[in-house]
Amino acid sequence: MKKIYLFIVLAVIAIAILAFIGTGSNKPKPDGNRPIPNKTIQVFFGNTQKNPNAIDCGAVFPVERIVSDNSGYDELLKQLFSGPTPQEADLGYTSFFSTQTADILVSVKTDGETAYVDLKDVRTLIPNASTSCGSSEFLSEIKSTLGQDGKIKKVILAINSDPAPFYEWLQIGCAPENNNCDASPFE
Image (cartoon, rainbow, N blue to C red; front, side, top):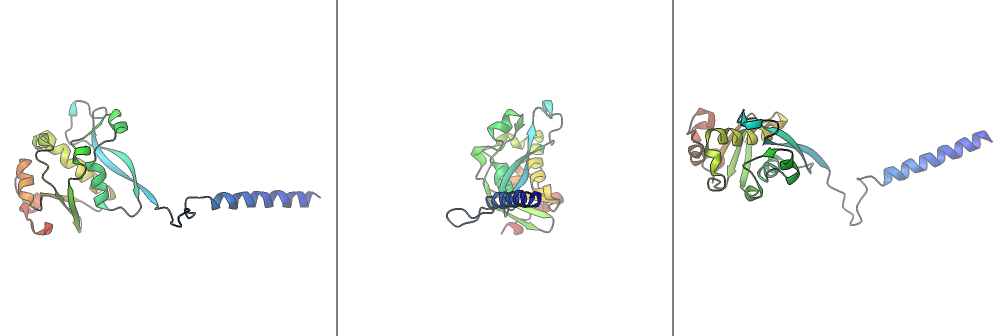
């Protein structure tokens, strides 16, 4: 009798486990499509609580975002360029990026360890990024966000496929660090 009782209990547990697994996120939706798997990424912003008085202008701190599993560098930048959410802002996260800059990305291409980021003309949208402290934060947010996987070591930026106006705006100028403003990778 005890063996039958034990068998019934184990069978009920097995059925419950199979039923629970069957209701998981990989179960097809009613429309027949499987849900898109997600992954967690990090987007980097300044933070007034973690870096009071902007002691280190280039100090940026990660926040987590959920994106589709097949997202690439373009999605990382779209998340960054949308700026901190209201909840993140309540935690002290700040940025030049906001809902007003959410659509500034034209394209992002990679070649080895270098990312080439082409932007719409942002100079009037975020004029304070051209200060020495502002440019440090601006560039740190982009470089840290793109470099989080360890594959991207260098970022070259352009406005409308031309790096020269971007680096002139930030008062850096064309130099070996930005490939002397070579526009050919943006073509």
